[in-house]
Amino acid sequence: MDCPSEEQMIRMKLETYTQVKYLDFDIPNRKLEVYHLDAIEEIRSSIAELKFNETLQGTEEAEPPVMEDQSKQKKILWWVLGINFGFFVIEMTTGWISSSMGLIADSLDMLADSIVYALSLFAVGGAIARKKKVAKFSGYFQMALATLGFMEVLRRFFTESETPLFQWMIIVSIFALLGNLISLWLINKAKSKEAHMQASAIFTSNDIIVNGGVILAGTLVYFLDSKWPDLVIGAIVFTFVMQGAIKILKLSK
Image (cartoon, one colour):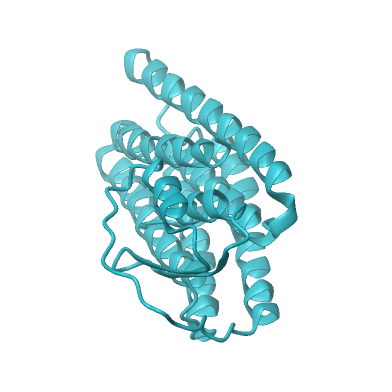
């Protein structure tokens, strides 16, 4: 599991099994411990449908671990959700004003994070049907935006278009970087070993890299007086957004 959406895909697959009592994800090492009562073949079959190249390492009798403070985790995730969605609005707006595809693409990456965090917060056992509907709508919406972004990148590539305002690219991305650094600090402050918190830290770390890419693109736009760095970083980030949309759509199946 390399991002929260993959964890959610597994959770949604196994939520319907009353025999499943607890799921313990180890995101960095791509391991999952399932605490359950019987139904081992059904559980294995459901996980296999996701095609994560899974292997069963063994089974043994064990008691589920004690749950951590969920209220504290939810409070942190609400803050992270708010930061991500806020910068989605800011970067989308300033991206169009400054004609920067890098900022627009980064804003969609922030939106993708917001969707996954929202699904995690609103995902409760009895709401699986509603959750799948939200996932399907969010996935298609994100995919449509990414497609429009690719089309705009191609249009600017093959036609004469203005050079983006590098000042906006650099300044807004620096603030977005600070927002993600605060999010990562909040997540790490919780010192949680829960999978969704670990996944959130990985997701936010990836966002920091994207922010750095947009800052670099803005710097190159300034020195080269060219639109190409912005188009390149925009296309790369739109690819990540499209991949995220596909993963979110898998949640609705």
